[in-house]
Length: 395
Image (cartoon, rainbow, N blue to C red):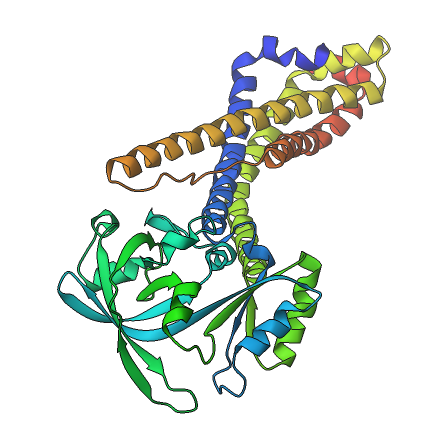
């Protein structure tokens, strides 16, 4: 009970000290929470369950080897592989509502979207369940809409599009132009704003054209431990390969650095608060010198005095951490709510810019208590060394 009497004797100073500690801790919580939020936003856009177990295989620039059907069958037979999803791409002229532009026509399986993390702005992707009707449909990229001066993807879903395809002649660098008589219904618009592409099912594509080789290949391995040996096998065969899991690892390292920098800035505010708390404990020591002398003369040991002062400092530090969490989390929730309202008004997507993992909040409370302990350690030792008779005479 003695360790909490400062709330009765000097409540204003005690709560101001806690508030000062809370402001410093709140700065750490808010800034690191911003780092976690940015990390989550970025990774959510590139990470899906299957993508981390997928390898993206492409033909080498020299074309010494190519992804033809025998090569794909060989990959599929590997003990490390669960599934193989190829993609073929031919140059094409796209005609939509009387306008024509250059793009690429791709043929792929529904699983290709799953392994690459593909998403739509509007409409739907191909699925195994709708394979029959998907043969009459295509999916276009967001970049394709810009080609035709369209901003709203809702304007194109359900409409029809035509193609004149330039098919490579095997063994030469020449192509032959094939005009597709059938018009294809636009089923969806992907989020890809970097490439002019229209995608049809691989089944429909292969029924229209001879495929000398594929452009890319998504290999889904059986487990994460199979990524490295399979990657080595692909490289040994002369193909280029990349794994999204490596990209995620690099992104996590970058964000860890960002969080560390933000934590340093917050730590500066916390250090200032800790200095203020140290001054408060030192003043408290001077004010209670006579009280310490009385406690020593009636039987309190030097260790009891140390425990008393450290307990007070730990309580103040811990409460400062709690107040800091309330300040930091409250600020984050307010800004998240404000951004969500603004995004909904302007037709954007709501995002959580500030995020606070529970383990991080527990760490902050524990760390604040430790800061309180360290801040109170010197005044506590100094109080324990005071001579009882000198302390009683102190005014």
